[in-house]
Length: 249
Image (cartoon, rainbow, N blue to C red; front, side, top):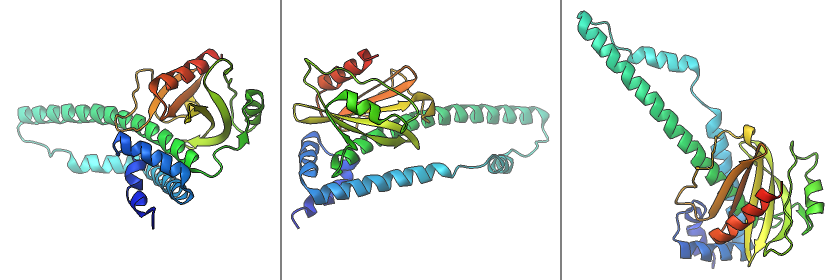
């Protein structure tokens, strides 16, 4: 089949591991090929299902206690050496706990950005990328009322290069949010809005997207809401749309 060569690299594309030139070619092909777009959507949904399942099963406090007991040092006859050994173990455990917390936080942040990228790709690959189709913000904004547990404002796009295509509901960390799609110079940009307190990972203004991510992305919090702007448009366009949203309040 003609698409076999494309599908052979589909997972690499979805993981953001292709060179920039190949990624742009893949973007164009996925948008135009119904078979590959459907396959991409299926794989993205499978990845998200696996990620959610992986977070359901975590070691219980009782299991952790038994592990600590099993590796606890045996009592030493030498009083001095026993205290030195105990102190060393305490330092190692403290450093390990701090390190695992730091690494875990970074992993959570990286996973959030990866899931946002997955949602962006899956939506563009879908045959029905938006549930409410309209270029009028006064039509799109009311559509979300009663569907998500918060309200947000959409920017005025007059005298700008951006156009609104529509919106849909979406989920991140099993939390409902809004997904809006904009167009600028034949590039599609996704804007995601979630309640900040509902997200697992705590992001800040210094949080950077993983370098292997094949999209430009900007994120910030405003009025208790977390915004993500992502797409293959230029960094200038991503920043321009983000500034319009920041000024919408």
